[in-house]
Length: 281
Image 1: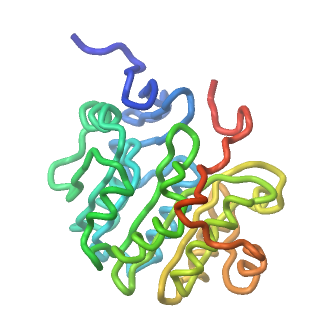
Image 2 (image 1 turned 90 degrees about the vertical axis):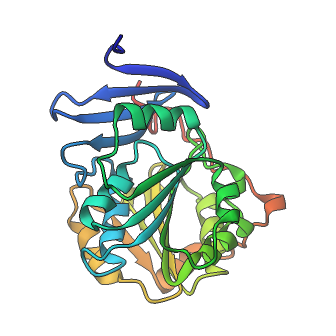
């Protein structure tokens, strides 16, 4: 018997719903406990609906020459939006996706199946544990988009975690992370301090209103040992339907200020968003 639409299931960490987009034939919104997690269009996987996903997409487009196949590690799966994006924009890429919620992963791969030959392999596992077992220098790009509910778990916010990410990346690799915070940005600054202790180059993408402390919102972090392509990234994000700003160099160092790296013993989850910040009712 087919499930009613929208599809609702109890997964490992809450209640997941897949809701169709009435304006796009095979597009779906995934929520967990009412919080939007992912949006995917099966007919047009290069379409990125959410602001943070578009910014990660812009970063992915500029980390290497267009179309070059990459080895990508995704921590956090959702509806596999970004893996699908990489599969069509960089054919031949090899991608591993690590998702702790096996029930959610099963729902997504069953109802929103990956196309044959996508090069995407999914793993039901804890992101930190999987990362610690991964080989050195095995990824060109590592994308961290892990939320337990609406918060990044504490064991993925420490310097020790960031050190594992740096170890797994190749010398010319790039670390990308989706985080959320608001003024006074204590959490976001600590995450940047973690990365600054391990990587030579950093950049931050966020909507100007978020950076000015006017609202709680997403921020995309980039870190690398080699110079980042900040100019084309800035052009893309500024011209996007959801304009954002790229901070790097001295302004970003000023933003980090006196924040210090956070060891495992002091790590905390990302802050809980204010009521109504991300929910859809």
